[in-house]
Image (tube, rainbow, N blue to C red):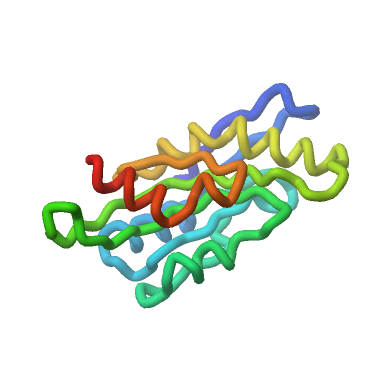
Length: 155
């Protein structure tokens, strides 16, 4: 079954689907630890959220951030393994919404893409049951590794 939602107020209305394969990639990260991260994007037709890239369990946070485009929007989930302040090994899943600050003159299509990502973020995030934390990043500093680690340690 494909779930989705209606996005209004961004030009012509669009239905954004969350295909089963996108939710399955998240479940593989959450339950089976098959992926360190999953990067999602809204397809070119603006109809569904698809998996753009998955990272193997051995990949680092630097590998993950290097996989994100510098000039476009994405959603991602990252499985953070860390040692807590009380010296326990823990794992927390972060949902990261990357709505980039465009470095070039924004065109109407880029502004529309940012709007679609911003409007659909909450609905998509709620499709991913088991996320511990959410980060809305508009700047690389918003999702620095120490920001994630600090949030995870406070929980």
